[in-house]
Length: 217
Image 1 (cartoon, one colour):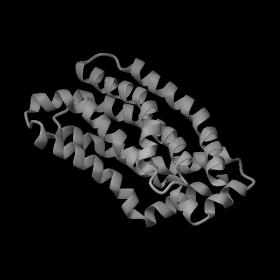
Image 2 (image 1 turned 180 degrees about the vertical axis):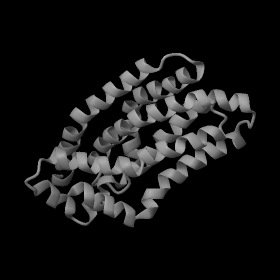
Image 3 (image 1 turned 180 degrees about the horizontal axis):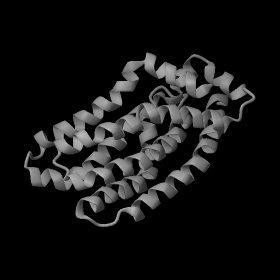
């Protein structure tokens, strides 16, 4: 029920849905203008650049995960509901990922073409984002829950979760680089899968506890 409600609200608030995608497009589009349009240079930077842009776009959308529920009082109702809180958090994160992380993953190949990413790297880009972006959403939910009661919590979310994002960024960009150079990427994908499994097990519980602290405070 929480998942369905969040999906409906996301489609009604189209600005929150579109903003991360526009940010992703702008970063990837401005980089060749600001640094160099040379194809060989861009193709070398594309794996890391696309992953950094996806990470920042996900981070941009995290503040709104619990904010509207907190402001209209429905978050307190969710905390008092008989459903397990970690399932409610997991449902909200799943809806958030479908509206941001999956959308970023689907448009990433287009930006890869713009940045002259070799076609051999496209499977690595798609697979790494499919495994990595849910982890970013789950980790970001902890920061969003801790700062939900603050007026300008966006910067604080960045400070809290960016250190935890670094392993995902390293393994994700390395998987794309390995695919480009023809090396096996199964090891990097396995590490991303392990991070996702760990985040699935721990992040909803941690975010639920953070929500109780934030609301009670």
